[in-house]
Image 1 (cartoon, rainbow, N blue to C red):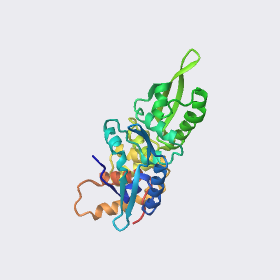
Image 2 (cartoon, rainbow, N blue to C red):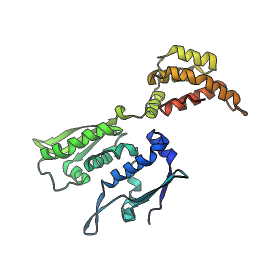
Image 3 (spheres, one colour):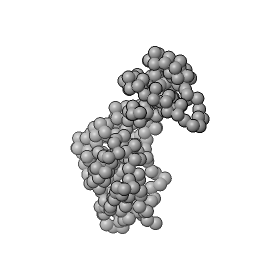
Length: 280
């Protein structure tokens, strides 16, 4: 089996990174260089092999499409990873400067929703690819684990802490605690988290009243949006957008929903994207 070329639309990449469409090419170029600077290391029979992940990337400017070619030499190894695949935001890992941060992130990210995982020390060293190295634990801690954890906590979607497992005075294992990193959440993730909370506070009652009385929005929806507008500090922009949303609704030839439902979805989507579009 081999890899087929992978094609992605520039607009989808821009949405993923929450960035202007015209910056996608320079960003993808940076991502590819960063990923290939951390090559895969594996055993091919009795040969230790190092391979880059991507052989080529091309951008079809007229069609707004990127095409990626994954290194075919990796296919026997990567195609067997389906059952152990962990999905993560690409922007969480492309900015890692050290390969050890990448490796440790991949190991721990699999346990994000469990929140805790333990490893025997030798097992952990094997997973990270340093078996036989760092006979003194303090060197492993200072040169590899601690710098990687700092980088993961600063740049990724998870926050990691750990403690030592000891037998007497000897370190025999590591216990990691993994939580969602609120400091690196995107605006969309913050909105989804706020919407998913069971009890909705009432942080902006005046704006909620405006949505109920002038835009016929259901009370629960009005409260949700009022809280999101208050959280993002975007009330002036939201108020400016509301009349434009009403005009768009009234211009619809085939209305499938009431004004309140239309305004709720439209304003919620604008907030979820992290910025309000005020253009007429």
